[in-house]
Length: 373
Image 1 (spheres, one colour):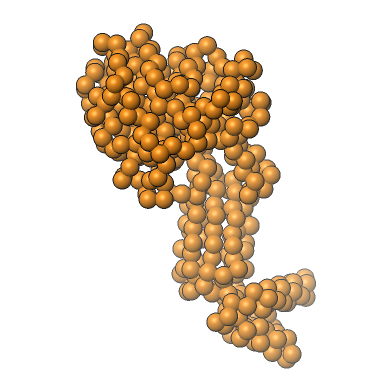
Image 2: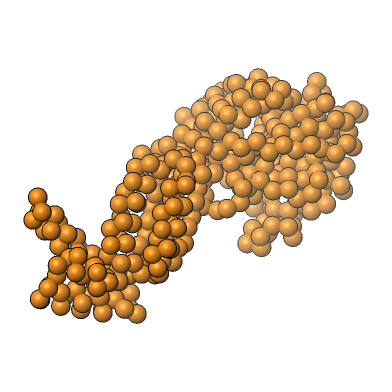
């Protein structure tokens, strides 16, 4: 029974400049580890081939070192790899692929689908119908010629393409590089392996997006997987198994705090996340001074535990309670200043007043702690 691994959207060479240097470097390294894991999975599951449906590289200008490392990472699987250019690494006359060939970096078992056509892996009984992008954007369906492609008798017809299935993905990406939703049926494909949508997604029985093997965005779209596909014979229904491959989990939360239970629930959610989390958190609403102290302590603990945590608190107003004021022992003029800053915040989201209130509260706490020692 022919079996292959379907993956896509490695985006090698992507730089994570929005993160701290240490975190960005770890996220880059995780993408190389993902390729190694794909090779190991293909070997463990006794796959006949690995099909990469576009965007192996994030740009044409990646370094020679990145090119060599990508192909080095495939070594654990000695069977055939078929790599398809996508919109980020289109098969231009001069491209990252031609540079890889000049470098002598491409192993003999890696087939580069730089031209439209068929790559026959007859020992594996696989006929790979390829629709590489030869420019970043196209407005015609490059998979249409699949219908006229011939394949050896007894071989599975597997389509390999990179683009947007029309009418079935969000409108914002349903534009360039279109693919007909009935391509598998129209072209007599046993399976259509797609890339471009970075999450795992089934279009129909024979058409799937594998998604990227290592998440790289704050988007809840089932990223971080590879697909093991088995088809018993030409015309049979494919059996698709989704295998988790991602090392890091990405979370983007937008939370509004108003009462104590909101803060407690947020802190519990942070506690429940794994150490491999990459978190982008934006807080709005209001919080007491005691609540902010609890929040800051929890964020400090989470920052040390997670791969990355970024928290935007500019929309979160400080709302000191009478208990907060009493705890600060801010009487007389200092108490009047705190009350004035509290009033300036209300309804205006005065960032300067918020920051001044936070600083003043911190100084008062430090004074109290020093006095008690």
